[in-house]
Length: 152
Image 1 (tube, one colour):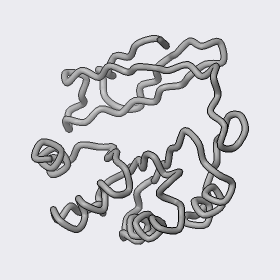
Image 2 (image 1 turned 180 degrees about the horizontal axis):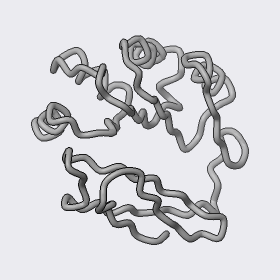
Image 3 (image 1 turned 30 degrees about the horizontal axis):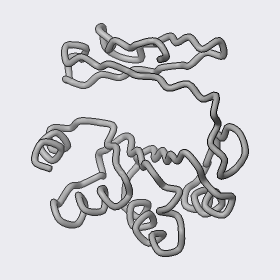
Image 4 (image 1 turned 90 degrees about the vertical axis):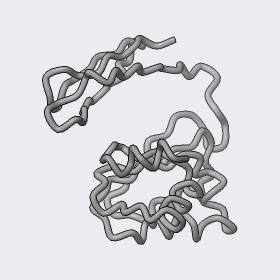
């Protein structure tokens, strides 16, 4: 836990974790999310059920201008509605049927090297996955965008 805390205090972004892990960082370790530009919440399918909904809502109550991305391999329509009600201008991207993982999904590994940073020490990269299964990278800021690997 010490290394992630150190990296967050140094300004690493985006901040990625499950809602429970982010709540732990907020409550026990005094992490401020006010300056974070992006939060990525993983495994929200079970966290949007009634018993964990308060945890997710606590993250959304943080006074921040952060973009919040939520991910789940499977998500029910009810959980999708709850997620949409928590934020403005929500966009839902889904593939396949609700609660049914896609067998033909391809996985992508992205390798980021530390020398791929801009003057502020942060890298920014937009990765677009193309319909033919290939990848391309578009540099948003900085001269040395991180490297990436093709789909596996």
